[in-house]
Image (cartoon, rainbow, N blue to C red; front, side):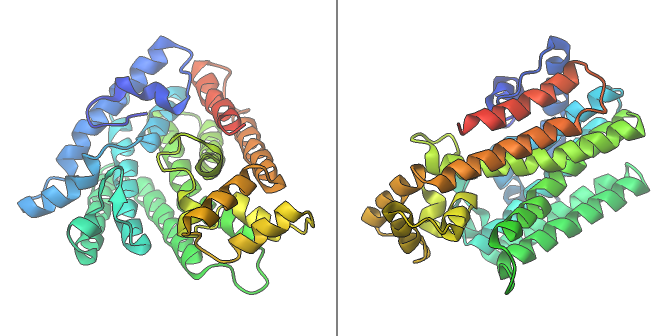
Length: 343
């Protein structure tokens, strides 16, 4: 995937995806290169300040996972269709808009290694720039037809529902793990599902193939986010893009933490881990190091790994209606990568 503006070929393999066929890789690279150019055009405003603020996160880079899935989905039809690039841009603009809003919700100071828009300017500016990017995405979607507008709007509605669910937390009687997985489906899976669907749709793939791609996108999106949760705990490096244990320090209840809190294991390590986690954000350095060590050795982490693997396998099964060609095998390789990256 693309990690920095204008250089897609340098980092397409960074996600762990094996393109299998050089022609598929070249086609995807071509789409992503065009997407970068179109993104810069789309965020340009007559007001220089709006342009600067809207380009802030764009120029900080990013994985471009959603445009990549549009490009790969189009492989099951005509990847050269002139509608594929605009469809990919719609998805990435929508994603970028959510990041501006997320940073306000999370009171984040940094995004992609740079000061977040809300910390550089204000919360109000960040919210308005996010709104501007949503508007630009909707405008471009209109050029793709009524169905594109409908799907983008419904995806946006799911994103908002997911953010609301995350904000209010589980209601009394709700299972915290089921609630968390629902939030990931709405906030992450929905947009990745629509990205894969758009690729198939605007590449002219058969309807049954478009449906399979959407189902794959939803599940692989959840799997990828869950694997990031595990890397934040298990990795000694910065594979996840964050310092290990960041979620723990910030009190973000990711899947391993939720499994640990729900555990009724009576061994001393499990009891001590629940005791620390029940305090909320673990900001004390000594407690943080202790909790991280306990989590890494816990049954909860093992269970979370099994959950990630099950989602990755589910995603692979969603591809079964697709022809057994290089593009399908490329998508399958992502399932393997996700299943293995946290082993």
